[in-house]
Amino acid sequence: MHVAFGWVSATTVPAMQAVSPSAIEQVPPGYRAAAAFALVVAFGAAVLFRSQRYVEAAVDSSMRRPHVSVVYGAIAYGLVGFLGLLALMQLSLVGITDSAVVYVAAAAVGAVAFALGGLGYVVVGTRSLELLGERQPWNGLVLGAVISALIWLVLPPLTAAVVWVVVAAVGVGGPVRTWMHDERGATVETAS
Image (cartoon, rainbow, N blue to C red; front, side, top):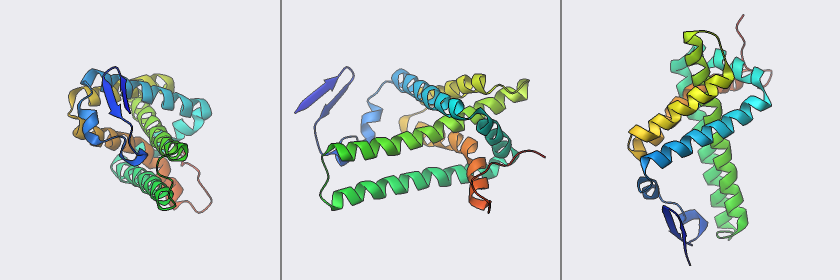
């Protein structure tokens, strides 16, 4: 079966093989940038709606040591990727390779990765605005989405994907570092 959606054309194949990295190269840079902007706005707004106070604490903890935050943010992305692939491989081992369960599991992994990206870009955008004046997380969300879109607009796809994750990792790393080293639970450090 062959399915076409505007600029994307795909043939129905098992879920584990449905998307190849080369498919992203065929998408025009403007569409990639628009998708990156929309995803960061959607997931970043969800994170801000959930807890603006958490985002503000994440700005403090991530920007206290940004060079260390990028490492811990990369660990978070690595953990999400590892656990997601592990879940998908377990599904394939029990014979579930082309069903809605696989698509839901893959979508859940993607949602967690985009939530990390949304948080990361809100933190980076908020901190960038704070350097110019007052801390404004909602405006930081928009600036973070613009940064995300620019990455996908000007860089080749593979380089853009790596840079996108590294920039998001800077914003995510502070809370991850605190969570990994805190004996009391998953609380974010606040400035004293």
